[in-house]
Length: 480
Image (tube, rainbow, N blue to C red; front, side):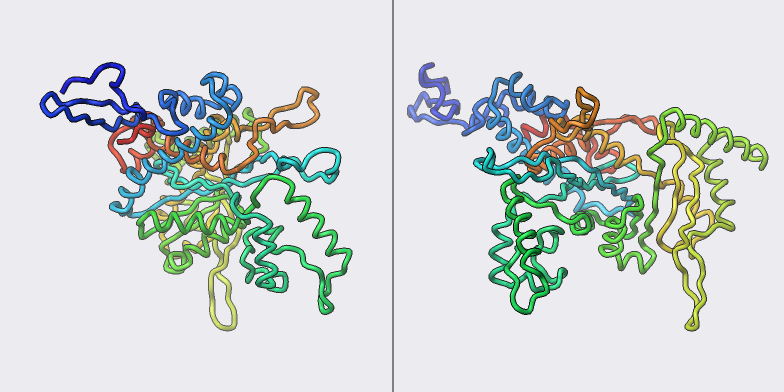
């Protein structure tokens, strides 16, 4: 079928039109995603460049100048790209993981803190509003990744941008939540605003001055950025529970730092697995006050010490990993992470807080301490040594570095011109867009970003076994 005349070759919505030679019937074909024109996304040709600029730490203003778009269009493009990433993950992450079952999963979980710019809402500025709140909010981002493949399973911002203080006020009036225990409140996940202040009754212990002080604080908060910070433990519990539903594995190995919210959440979500010795929790900590020079000196000295130890023991191998394993195996003949405690009713094991230094140092952070909060007394020294060999936090540390270096709204603070403080000028006002940008980066990092390890150049998704190819940004944006 030939095209109809050029003036009518395309429909009003941009679809290509054809006409049959015989019956003269006209028809229009739905365009492909890379040629589609939809409402609010009429310049679909810039989606690929927009994604590259977003993932190259280009600020919002500079991106708008390069693409010749407005700020409203910028956030429309961001939401479109976020939806495309969710569609891509549904096909290439969720469905493949439902079919896979892993023998064991090594999960590294860590928190990153960024500062959300706290700005007044529209109409709440000027000289009439003298109350000033904190100009920056420390906001947590939770990241969990596979230790061996560095595949990032989830990355969540501990912030709820949908709930308002008005919703909390209504529920407080209807359900009398100000008289409930903290654990029984509907909004207990918001540490500072679990209920709305109510006038004290005759039987209340709160004074009128305390009530007005608390009310003023809440009313001042209502004039600023929408949304509320969610408690770290609440976010971590939900984060780990969703990973547990997503990934099928009979045995779990967790690597975190000594963060109480992370440790508590693991013990709650995986209580059964820990009780049956199907899950172990390891602590991995490094001294972040070291300089690069000190870390490198530790790295070199650790290698020398390991080789000298192997020579003294008469081992004929030069492999640092083999020597480290043999040294750990010898160490765990007498070293224990738990101690046996005797009571009137019997004996039991308690956490001894007895960490060790990992024999393999890293060139950028030096030596790291390793501990285990779960009981390993049933394992042989060689089995414990094999577990400790895998304990590191490189997976989450690498992804967090990508967040800092690739997303403008989440980069490290800048030093002011006077040198008297830090500037968070590029931090965003609405954490909803931070969550969407991190999801976009996670999709790109897992399926498009290849790194070299053990002689192979593969993406984290390939190493985990979810796919056998490296994708590109166009595969995500123009998913068929």
